[in-house]
Amino acid sequence: MSDANGSVEDLTAELIQILGAENVILDKGERRFYSQDIYKQGELIALAIRPGSKDELSRAVAETTRAGFAIAPRGGGMSYTSGYIQQAPDAVMVDMSRLNRITEINVQDMYVTAECGCTWADLHQALKDKGVRTPCWGTLSGLHATIGGTLSQNGLFFGAGQFGPSAESVVGLKVILADGAEITTGAWGTKGGVPFFRHYGPDLTGLFLGDTGALGFKAEAALRLMRIPAFEDSVSFAFEDYEACADTMCEVGRSGVAAEIFGFDPNLAEMRLKRESLAKDIGALKGVVAGSSSLAKGLGEAAKVAVAGRRYMDEVAYSVNVTVEGRSASAVAEDLEEMRRIAVGHKGREIANSIPKIIRGTPFAPLNNMLGPEGQRWVPVHGIVPHSQAKPVWQAIYALFDEYADVINSHDITTGFLLTVASTNGFLIEPVMLWPEQRLEIHNRSVESPVLKRLTDYPANPQASKVVDEIKQRLCHLFLDFGAAHFQIGKTYLYAEGQDLAARSLLESVKNAVDPARKVNPGSLGLN
Image 1 (tube, rainbow, N blue to C red):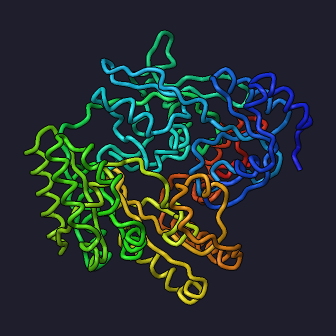
Image 2: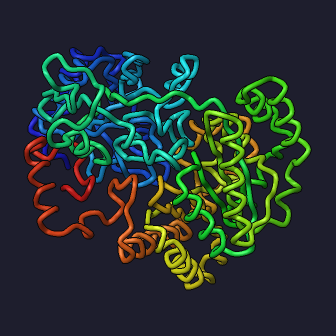
């Protein structure tokens, strides 16, 4: 039960006064939807709200906490670590989707400000015609993932090989605290200041990045801009074993010249190829054309993708894909030669670069990959380790999967790996599991309807899900043993268990200062 000192009915009436009846959601089916993330169903919330301005957000948060209800922010709903779903019933969920305006694009001072319900896809669209972007310019889920959700979880993909994760692109935040107070961080918070610089005194911005919404509600973010490089190209390689794959990715990461570096193991590559043929994906080919510097070049690149089809992956074990950017074609060509030198030095062979071409051509594709090729449920677990630990942690995960081999096979669980690199010093390894299990409503709303119709609608399968959850927890402990870092900490990764006592005490003190009643997303970061 909730420990609220007011009734749901009274709170609902107050929130309707602030937000309007259409933005206070009471329907049980909708509340159930807002109570789940990609991996699991949380406790049923009391209601969901959709503020349309910073003032409405401030007043709604203050009223909710004053009445004694827990309240949590929800961006695009892409969490799989209980980032916003609740462990106790009768909380209030804040749907940030109406706070989606881009408030300033300043190409003279090189920053952009946007409300935190804005998606990465919308931000990218607004910036590209001006010839600028943020250094890390979104995640693969950026069609749904919001700026605020990503900054709360932290995350990476586009541009992260050179510029690090999303948090490193932030220069300031406007945050609503539990009592409705607003704070502004960085130079943005100075009297008369603008968000051109993050570091002015202690880095208060950093407190609210990667906090999984535990410390406040990110209302608006300022991110630095850079000019979009004039040229880009990509290259892909195949390797016979995971050791060579890891060695190559780490060395490419250390080189500091790759915008994106990502790889697959044989299982994950096979799962991708079971979906629609790359050659038949007309939308993807259109993206390749549109993403090229000229129509002629774009048509040529699309033709190469179409000719390659899927055949080039038939005998590929482990694969690595690299995209590089530069001011000139010659600079890009030199960087690609460096990538080839590194890969060949680790016994890699070059293969068609269809996958990085398509991903760059359509960077924010529909989220059909959140289900398996037959409709299986999907969950990733990840850790970020230094390059020296890349092969040992991968070997340890394989050993864990071998330990569970019989039960994995008996429950039709499939495992695989997605790999990437964060700037020059972080290796991210993401084991994934797919298993036959009933879909949640979030899958029905996120996967495209024509794709969903072709997939198996599995019945409930609690035995297999119990095994998946057990392996997931074992992986979290394995990563803790390696001292790994994590994005999307939520209520899943063992963040508190890995902290020293002094650091934990300081974080508890910060929580007490910004949320003394512990009503903002309780349980996140282990802050109960």
